[in-house]
Each structure stands twice: as C-alpha cells, then as structure tokens.
Length: 334
Image (cartoon, rainbow, N blue to C red; front, side, top):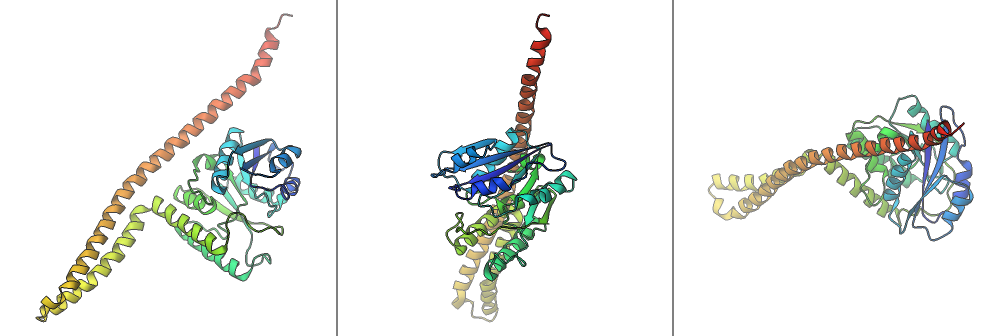
C-alpha cells in the first residue's frame, strides 16, 4: 500500500521546510510513503528547499496556474507514481502532519472514498467570528448541493483513494475544495470528515486578496458545479420563478379586462407575456443542458477508463523492467 502526500506550492520557501519535517515517515497499514511537491510557478527558492529535503518528485508549472490546477496536476502525478492513497496538505504548515494517520484510517478500513479534515471552526481560536460564520454557511450550502454532510468544506487537508482520484477532474481555475465535494456527491462517493488540529499561520493567504473576493469566487464555483451536474433542476427553478413573475401582470390585466377596463392595461399583458416566454426559454435551456450533462458524464467515464488503462500499462512496463535483470541473470552462461 503506497501513500503519496502531495503539497501544492507557490513561493513557500519559508514554510515548506517545516511542513516537510512534520510529515510522517511511516504509518500503520502503509508500506511506502512518498512526497510530491507541485511547484506552481514559484519565483523564490521553493524548489531548492524541496530538493534539499529529498522529496520524491517535483511537478513544475512554468507559470502560475492556480491552486485548482496544481491540485489536479498533483492527482495525475500521484497516480503515475502508483499511489493507492493520496493525501493533500498545504505548504504553509497549517495542518499537523501527525493527523495524516487520522485521514487515512477510514480509507484503509474501506469506510470512505474521500476523507476531509475538519478544523472544528467553532472551537478553533485561530478563526474569528465572521470567518467562522462564513465557513459554516458555505459548508452548509456545499452540503446541500452535494447531498453530503461536510462540516468544513474548504479544508485543504484531505485524503482520497486511488479509485476516487481516477474519477476526480477539477475544471475550476480558483479552488478545488468545493468543486471536489460536489463532484463526489453527484458520483455517489462515500465522503466522511474527521476532526484535525491546526497550527498557527502568520502569513496572509495567497489564494484570495480579501474575504469578499473569496466568498464571491466560491459562490460562482458552487453555482457552476451545481448547474453542471443538476442542470434540469437548476434551470427549472429559475424558469419557475420567471414564469410566476410573468403571470402576475397577466392576472392584473385579466382582472381589469373582465371589469371592462382592459384596453388601458395592455402594458401588463405585454410585460407578463415577455417574462413568461423568457421563463419557457429557460425551461428549454434546462432540457438542452441536461442532455449536455449526460454527454459530459459519458466523457468522464471514458476519461476514467483511459486513466485506468494508462495506469495498468505503466504497471505492466514497470514489472517488465523489474523482471528484466532477473531474466538476464538466469540466461547468463554458467
């Protein structure tokens, strides 16, 4: 059983060393642990620090592509490394390396496909009242959209099985956290959370410039993902709201019409008809989007099969390379 711990990095030369030092070198039920660093276009000595600490693999982005793309690059590299389990942690040493054992425990027991570290926001003194409230609200929304119970939806400390990684494709340019959960819920994966500890982080966050910006970006991601996986329901709700709004002025016109004053209220009829037609167009958009969504699911299934095939071919090639010295030794003259 191989565990790969992936760490997305952007200019983390000051904190990466401490993060790497805190990672476990052995765990019960794990035969091998390898460390993977994803350098997302760092301009400092992040890569030098990673090499000095002997990480097993470094994935380079020639320019900054964002946290979501770094996470996806890490998954692909970890799968290529032969990972059975993958843990993602932050390079700022926010999460305690010892708690990786808590993350992988449900995976080893076969109880979950994905495990998310719960920072227990209500009890964590590092989070202010406003941030705690926003995190709880966001997690509640993500839980509703995904059909899962996730108390800390934006926690980057998470673990997943090889099978879950093969099914995960992050398309967002901002963050992977909420998108991954909504995907997992719609793909019927088993997702659980475990309480974890956190270390104090002194540097400001690099993912977003301000809290309102973060909330806006996460909100856009949630809406996009829900519309992608549940387009019929999403557009039906919008269409129903527009249709009800359109009916109101039409009823107003009918009221005056049957009371002998319809000619003076034609504007209500025109406005109501326009809004009602718009609602019908949204319904049709929902039907078309649902067909596109079904096609996307087929494409995701094909992508998963391709990934599995590539992994099997890679394992086969590695086995041939491993067997070659033994064959050469056996066939050598005595």
